[in-house]
Image (cartoon, rainbow, N blue to C red; front, side, top):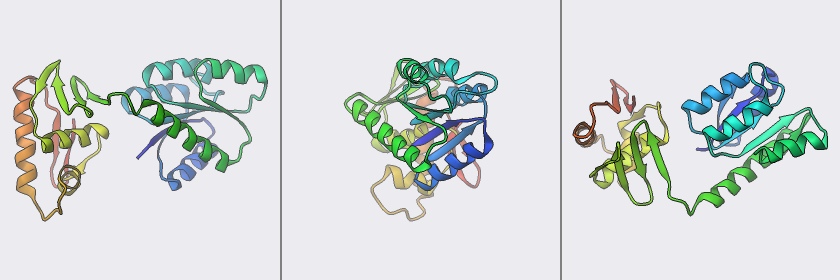
Length: 224
């Protein structure tokens, strides 16, 4: 699921955008200041950001280049500033689109979809590398490494790590993991999942002292 970072200090507008985007099938993270926005960009991965300009803490003009440094994602600026100079400056500074307030929410949804599709099309030929701390997975070559040291993983072990790295911090049940890593029907295969998680931990332990997979008792597993 594509995740959108909304950086907008007006609570009503922020909530409206989040509610409508979520109904359209997106996951949203809401920030209400420039400082909060950059903090989210440092710890979560997003598909697109919606950025207001008049923000407390760190205004949108200053936040845009910093946001682009943190994540290579499209940014849609939403602002009451409607001068051509403002639009040109923001677009040349890295924004992919500019929408003037007040705006039609359905137009915003359409522009979000366009930018995500364009970005996906432009990057689909590139190797996709997922990373978390010093753990890296290349989903094109099916290779994995920690501190540049290779990990020899089975297909299921790789898919389990891929799922966890796609959603850092999210807890996945054993059924979630089985459904993602195996092309089969889950029949309460707890032992199978436990064995594979144990094997992954052993392989990680052979190259690093850091723990990467946390057991959330009674629920499942997540990155720690």
